Amino acid sequence: MKVFLMGMPGSGKTTLGAELAAELMIPFVDLDTEIEKREACSVSEIFAKKGEDHFRIVEASLLREWAGSEQSFVMSTGGGAPCHHLGIDVINGSGISVFLNVPVQELVERLKDKNDRPLLKNGEDLLGQLTAMRKVRLPFYQRAHITLQRPDLRELLEKLQSKK
Image (tube, rainbow, N blue to C red; front, side, top):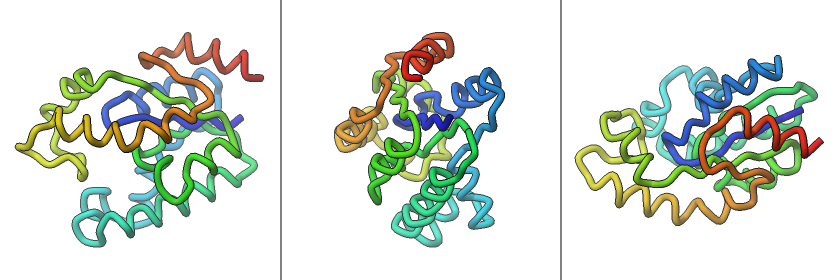
């Protein structure tokens, strides 16, 4: 089984993904961490030194590698992974996609004291930035097999069971 968690920055993909992988007893993969390993620097450094285009190419390549593997896993995708280089098609063609549909105002609360997100500009209107980003990404996220209004392990396990 391959499960891909998608959603906006701060939606809980990594937290829920690690919990789900432990429950299913399969590996957890954080796509951003895989990118950092491949590039030998942080996501923020990649954006700063090589730009978003380079990041998206590496992201798409790793997504395809994992999706094409025989291995079962739970993956926390980067928020933009489904939206670039046909990522949503790769995801939906190789596993079960899950959209964590967290309200923007809640994302603002979760992210207001964090400054490690390269696409969110510090000191600027976080609500406005997240609202604009969500508007662009939502058509991709809405193609997910499962949508959760709140990151909830039990609900996700039930929905995954019904997909088998």
